[in-house]
Amino acid sequence: MLARQFSRQLSSSGLRMSNVGKVGIRIPAEVSFSTEEIPDEFCKSFSKGKNSYKLSKQVVVKGPKGTLKTQIPPFVNLSEKDGKVFVSVENPDDRIQRSMWGTTRALIQNDVVGATEGHIALVKFVGTGYRAILEEKNGKKYVGLKVGFPYTPQLKVPDGLTVSLPNPARLLIEGINKQQVKLFAARIREFKKPEPYKGKGIFVDDQKIALKERKIK
Image (cartoon, rainbow, N blue to C red; front, side):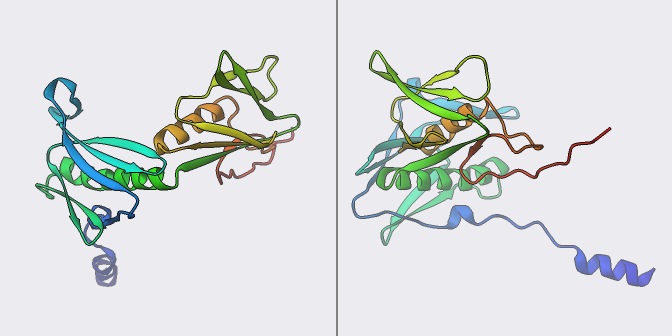
């Protein structure tokens, strides 16, 4: 009994905070970085429990690929040192501020990468006859999906994104906004999610699924 209690004491450990928010973001020479105040009438807000928080500031990242803006709450502060941007919050012990700390840092990092290199998503069509088609109507581009339906679903390519077909079973989505790129890829995937028996469906990036055996009666 004593040995069991002793082993439990050794295996227990306290909760550890993530240090992602503390890591500096390197700003390349070709990128300009600034923050702006947002007028109250244009501020968005979010709620957590009974509290509501305004997004009263925005981070502006300009690079060779374009300009990206990310709105942040007033308790998030940014500072520059030695070519890096550091994110901090007014009260690290506050649960909401602590959660926004790492999130804000990740969003700004995505903006820096997007403004310099861009983001991509590779959509793969796995299955006999599964493929994508690119069409243009009235100056707008559409993605048609041949995925076993008696009709061809079509999705309009959002503004700011570029779509290409390296081959009929591979669709490449490019853009500076990571959220828009991944969201459009996810919308395409919804039409034929990968199934676990034959491994057919629409896959995004390096997504894999574990195959199951069919039950034979």
